[in-house]
Amino acid sequence: MKFTLNGQEVDAQSATADTPLLYVLRNDMQLNGPKFGCGLGECGACAVLIDGKVARSCSVPLNAVAGKKVTTLEGLSPDASKAASTKALQDRAVLDVSAAKNDAPAASRTYTLHVVQQAFVDAQAAQCGYCTNGMVMALVALFNQQPKATDDEIKHALSGHLCRCGTHVEIMQAAARARE
Ligand code: FES
Image (cartoon, rainbow, N blue to C red):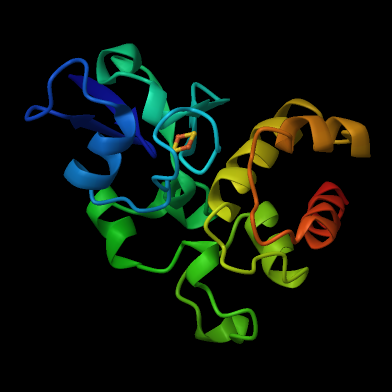
């Protein structure tokens, strides 16, 4: 099953057609940007972009993305288009905002964060960070369509993304920074 993953054509040969995309991304492609939360399409932790639209990868069978463009958190960085392969992106390691140190000097990083990722770091919007990646993907999809989305539209876009730490104020601050 061939599809484009973060700008590279990949062939998920070892997975069956009904394997959840999330499993393929995490287990076969070794990408841990999409998180396993509920596995039922209810928490948003596994969000990715499919042809630019946000989708819950735990609930998308592999055969549904044949020939499509899948973007994970790892593919958001402006550096992603320069990487020779998905493996090169994995080797860059910490594209995962939840794993990035809030106070790490930018000069020490070997990659450039997407503006939405950077906004989450700047607003210190992650506590445990497990929901963060899915929220970033939802906001990227929203701002690609509506760069000046209102607060209500942002809340609507994030409404299905569960955050149990409750950093909702900082999350909205991050979204506002990214919108600017
Ligand atoms: Fe996919 Fe929760 S893990 S929505």
